[in-house]
Image (tube, rainbow, N blue to C red):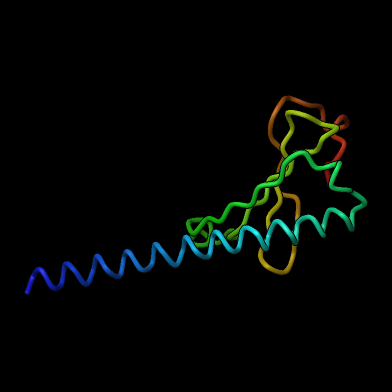
Length: 111
């Protein structure tokens, strides 16, 4: 009996892990596409974007943050990463990381 309960619990955990991984993988592609569209509306081209990564965090959802964080590195500003939050409806810049820079020197800050 204990083996059946343990097997059922482990099966549920495995199913949840597979569902989360599938959501994160497919959602990442969608969020990157939405982010590119957002940046194009801001006047940027693909050549302006050096790197773009989308990350899903279930923990963030638990503590009432947004599920998706998107990081963008621009070609003309190496070493600086801009972070955006995305809740499925709205994209907003949430932070800047990387090399030390004076706020007035940041080329893509939205503040």
